[in-house]
Image (cartoon, rainbow, N blue to C red; front, side):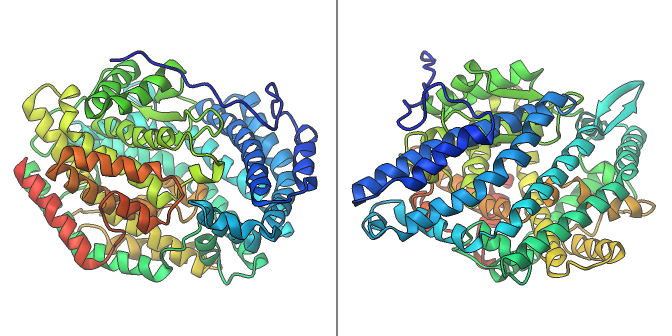
Length: 573
C-alpha cells in the first residue's frame, strides 16, 4: 500500500485563513460583502460565485462537525447545544440573505454566458428552484422542525434493553436475532419491541407535530401538499410522483413474489410450522451468525484492504479517513442510531459514522458508506460547492454499487469458502428485500402527506394496508399486531429526512446494472462507475447514469430484467 498523503484544505480567497464560525455577527459581513459586490462581466460573476462557494463550504463544514459530534455523543450537552445554536441562531439569519444572493445571481445579465458552461446549467436550475421555494414565513418553521427531528435522535439514541444482565443498544440486541435458539430469538425480539412501544405515543405525537409543520411549510410556499413541495425542494426534475407509483406497482408485481420464495424456503429449512418475525435474520440451516470482523479496528483494516484490491485510489480514500480520525464505527451507548457518510465541504474528506457490532450487515454498511466517501473524494476538486452536491439518486448509486462490486473481495472478511458463499447469498437476498421495504416507506409517505389531517387510527390502518402489499404472505404476525402497527417508527427517514427513501430503490436498480457491467468487464465496469461519480452534479440524473453505461429507468420491464440477473447470480453461488 502506498504512502497516505493527507489533503490540505484549499487556500482561502475570500475568508481569512483563521476564520471560524462562532456566531451570526461574525458571518454577516461576508454575506453583506457579497451582496454589495459589483459584477461587471461573466468572469467577475464566476469569481463572485467562487467567493460565495467558499463561504458556503466553510459554513457547511462547521455545521457538519456540530452534527457529527452531537450524533457521536448524544448525551453530551456541550455538543447538543453547539448544534442547537447553529439551528436556532445562525441558520435562520442565513436563509433570507442566501435568498438575496440567489436573486442577485439570477438577475445578473451575465448569467446567460455562464449557462453555456459545463455544470452551470444544473446549478442555475437549482438556484431558480430555491428562489421559487423561499418564503420568509418558513424560516421559524424550519427551526422548529429541526428541533423536533433532534428529539427523535435523542429518543432513539436512549433506547436500550437488558439481556442476560447486560445493557445493550437496540442495534447490539438486534444481532441476537441471529441466535440459533428460537426461544432466545423470540425473547430478544419481545424485549426490543417492548422497548420501542414504550415510546410509541411520544413518537406518534412527535410525528403528528412534524406533519403539521411540514404541511404549513408547503402551504406557505403555495403547494397543495408537502409531497409536492419536497419533490420541488429535492430538485426532482427527472421524475414525478406518478413515476414513483409506477415503481411501487413494478416492485409489487416483480419483487414481492421473490420475497415469498425466500420466506417459503426459509420456513422449510427452519422446519417450523409458522415463520415468525424473529425467524427472519437467523441462518435457516442452523449455522451460527456470520462474523465479518472482530471490532472497529479490524473492520477498518479489512475495509481498506478490500478497497485497495478494487483499485488503489479507492483504498487511499479510506486510508486518508483513518489517518485523519474521520471514522467512528462501533456501536455504544449514547450514540445516535444509524449510519452515515457526512461530506465535509471545505477539506473534502468526509466522515463515516456507524453502529457496527460484527455482523455481515455492518460489513456491507462500511462498503455502502465507503462508496459515498469515494464519491466525495472524486468530486473534491470540482470548482464550486454546488457542483459537489449530487442529487440523492446519484449519491445512493455510488454507495449501493460499491456494496455489489466489492463482493469479489469479501474473502478478506470470510476466509472460509462456505461462509463467503453464505455472505454473498445473504446480501443478495437482502437486496431483494430492500426494494419492497423502500416501496413501503415511500408509498406510506405519499399517503401521509396527501392526507395530512388523518387520525392516529387512520395512520395505523394505512400503514398496515401498505405494509401488507409489499410483505411476504408467509410470515405469521399473530399476537404481534401492536408491534406491527408501529414498525414505521424505527425508520428515521420519516422523521429526519422526509421523502428521502425512493432514491434507495432507484439507486439499487442502478447498482445492479453497474454490477452487471462489472461482471461482464471489471475494468470497464469500474471505470464507468467512477466516470459517473466524477460528474458530481454537473449533469442531469439520466446523463450521469448514462456515463456509467446504465439506464435511469424503473419500469416493470427493466425491474424484471435486473431481477432475472440477480436470480442468475444467486443460482451461480
